[in-house]
Length: 64
Image (tube, one colour):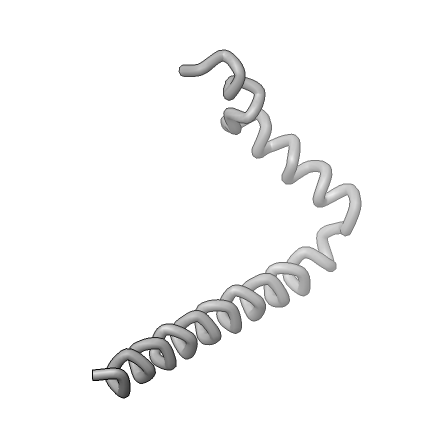
């Protein structure tokens, strides 16, 4: 492993620390709301990327 990439390696201790910090900042009651919003954002992103892919395929079909 490259020595410069070592600080970017994320392991179990770093993930635990991130989870603890998030719990301290937002509290246990806000986490489900945040995850729901994140899931909705990911779903919308996937939908938009699939629509873009279909549009580009349609444009290529029209060129032929």
